[in-house]
Length: 445
Ligand SMILES: Cc1cc2nc3c(=O)[nH]c(=O)nc-3n(C[C@H](O)[C@H](O)[C@H](O)COP(=O)(O)OP(=O)(O)OC[C@H]3O[C@@H](n4cnc5c(N)ncnc54)[C@H](O)[C@@H]3O)c2cc1C
Image 1: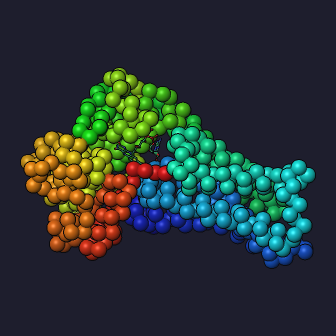
Image 2 (image 1 turned 90 degrees about the vertical axis):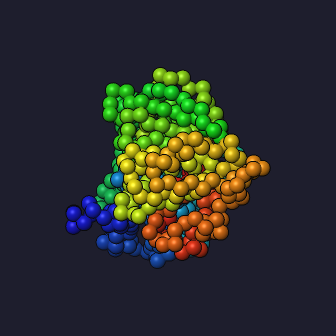
């Protein structure tokens, strides 16, 4: 069994789902061992059960977002964050239904909403639910509400703690079930785990990061308003990674400040002591990369991600489809392949706005003779004498270039969301097996 788990990522992924379900449903199992109290009907029991599951799911969000490498390595950050979003919405629904059932079946409980006179257990419930509503609204509509990412992230963390802490205080206050021994031990354990995860994320992990600093070696200007930030490990062996993965960078401040940004490595995985990140100037943080001075201190949390050719050592070749700055993980895959003398065919379909915008244009040309590499540039605004592909990467263009034996290759897509969706749909249309298509989203929220 242990050997199977060590060898099979699918088995590990299923195991994590089992752990998740067990923790979420455990409160219910404990309830089953105890007879319901006198006079409490089905609806009250159901309401309590839904509240417990919702609270357990909210507590588990700390584990989902703690960037635990083993969990991350099984699914990839995209899937974990999707799961985080959907389970938060399910938990939100359960937590809202919990009091609504009570209000409908026992209308006198509506008085508990009068927080001036209501007992503390009800006040905690109102505070926890209000925080949850704010959290859901600010997360789903962050961009339309024009909330900048960094303040949002701080607010999100605070609200999450308030929801779980006050939710637990409410459950303790109601106390019938929590006075049961098994239940109180269980909730104590869940609360303790959430607290330990918080300590791990806020204190232990940043502390480890301070032990492995990096220094900026150079900042190299690239085409397309991109700067390559080259970091050299300082007093340690660097960060081993697989080409295509990413890390969270903290630049010029302490990692305890928790102001970090995710970037894919664009350099070769063969050299983990010098890591390069190619960064497009798009906002507050990225606009200042060009001004970073050599010698500036940096810290890395990583590597993360499953968007890597290294997971498919038995693939006959690779199709890399990049749009704009989505070229960075592909660049790492290609330079690593060159250094490892990988003789498999690589097809790079690379969409850019103009010819002068093409990041790594010259570097890619240099790779061509050193690798079985076909490059197809697709320009939205081509120069007059342009002989190559133009417009968008669509079904027709893909059909022209991808191999006839679609399933013999692994396909990697990294681009703007609209292009990723279109390319994914086109590949499925062309009967590329769904398990052969891998995507990296640069916008987490
Ligand atoms: C897995 C992954 C790999 C990435 N790799 C690259 C890369 O190789 N090169 C590159 O140029 N960009 C990459 N990005 C995107 C990059 O992280 C954002 O462009 C950058 O964080 C924007 O920060 P800003 O303050 O300059 O922009 P802002 O204008 O503040 O933010 C623009 C958008 O970027 C996102 N963002 C901002 N701050 C953060 C943060 N701290 N954490 C997460 N998202 C944030 C938000 O969606 C925000 O709406 C990657 C993103 C992810 C998720």
